[in-house]
Image (cartoon, rainbow, N blue to C red):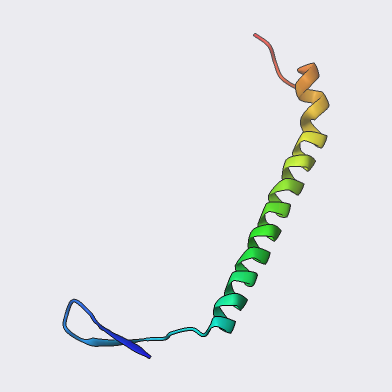
Length: 64
């Protein structure tokens, strides 16, 4: 484990990850990013599917 000093002078122990743990973290972060992108994409498509025709035809909006 690595050690470093805090502003107050206290010694803080830091954990050094192994290569296997770093690879697992990277894979997990990539999976989370892909799931988030898919989630955003689904909402984007669903929104345009639901609102698309109304927005293009300007229905449901009052014109003044």
